[in-house]
Image (cartoon, rainbow, N blue to C red; front, side, top):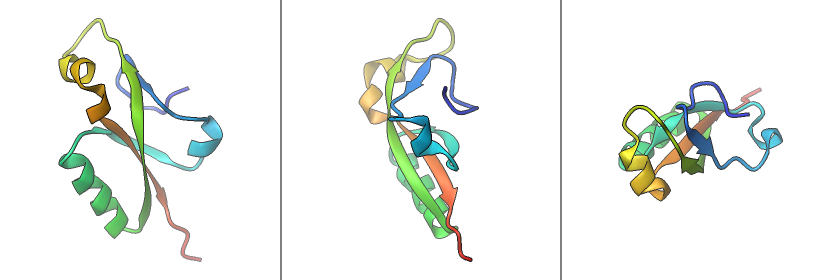
Length: 84
């Protein structure tokens, strides 16, 4: 099951639910925005996980970029680093 907020028709390439427990889905991005957002979260004290999206299928909305270059887009997850 994909995390809340994943656009309809996007399938994330997530190895298992156990590997994303405790991680918050932040969105799908490509560079340079992906790098900017990842660096911002790191500066704020978060761990960052970036995973590829597996495939995209949609019957509505604009999905041309996803379909033409899916390898370009990545899903970004964050997890707060415990400081205690």
